[in-house]
Amino acid sequence: MLGILTFILVFGIIVVVHEFGHFYFAKKSGILVREFAIGMGPKIFAHIGKDGTAYTIRILPLGGYVRMAGWGDDTTEIKTGTPVSLTLADDGKVKRINLSGKKLDQTVLPMQVTQFDFEDKLFIKGLVLEEEKTFAVDHDATVVEADGTEVRIAPLDVQYQNATIWGKLITNFAGPMNNFILGVVVFWVLIFMQGGVRDVDTNQFHIMPQGALAKVGVPETAQITKIGSHEVSNWESLIQAVETETKDKTAPTLDVTISEKGSDKQVTVTPKDSQGRYLLGVQPGVKSDFLSMFVGGFTTAADSALRILSALKNLIFQPDLNKLGGPVAIFKASSDAAKNGIENILYFLAMISINIGIFNLIPIPALDGGKIVLNILEAIRRKPLKQEIETYVTLAGVVIMVVLMIAVTWNDIMRLFFR
Image (cartoon, rainbow, N blue to C red; front, side, top):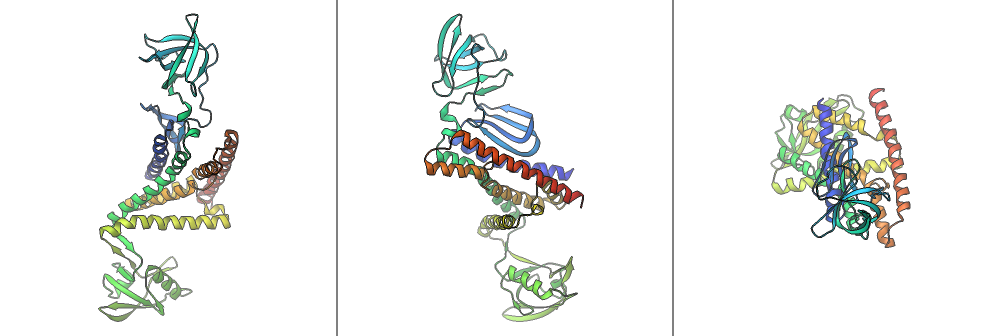
């Protein structure tokens, strides 16, 4: 149960932060947001805000979306002869067009529609008491659909395709950007919880109590200058030295040179065997000043992103489904993190957030990266792609993503439960 709650909480935070990026910058770019959805599938909660946006929670905690005016089938259809009820504002413009028998009041004006335009000229025309009349429609008017759902009309100036190229570009980039920001913030929290940021660029190390070095009398903080014949200048060189000196050896002993007050001292230590890896019981030193801790959030996030990009590069040049993890693998990882305390959960949250940010920037049409590529093409051509072409390209991307997700999920199930 704890694993399920951790999975839902971690994914929920990541999705809300990601989609809020799209939502916020769409609004700033003048785009009407139809729906802000958390999860996929049938709705379990819905609220229509004063801004005309439907805020929904859906049953499957896998992803979410921001639906903007002008995307897909977003036009209001009223057949000729349809009876509607009009509500007029003080200036005589129509502020509500009611297609249902719901949400009526005493001031409505019945009309049988013959013609309308809610995108460009903003008018509605029809028979009122057998007399044909035309009314101007307010820019922010709403339509009450047959099922009682009330939505705002979407004039051309608030549709996605008519936003500025920079507005569309930042709207599409904002989701992954927020994932990176979340990663940095969570790493900050971890660093402050741990009292500092790891200093991997020095050979001044923290000696762990009960570790191999502590057992031979090495003090809590020590400067290690050499392991065997290998010079040690930082954390990476220490790891490499230990691996080289213990390679293909059973129960090895190591000569470790430690600098104390300007003089060198050598100790012989037997590292602890941990599943084939030999451990000295040493950790990187810690920088605990505020500036180092602040910068550490960025550097830790950047290092994590570089590791993910390196793994992605290897996956491209050496494709292997076993290197990919889908929702099942992520659920398993979240369950493991939940068993090991809050710090592991936070680290998992930061890593998955950065991972999803990078994944969404892959230039596949269904992802944010694909949309950004289309925005760049539009900027170069100085005109957007035809709507039909963009729709087909996006559909192809969706098909690719669905097939990949099915393959990865199936592989996760087989690998984790049947091997």
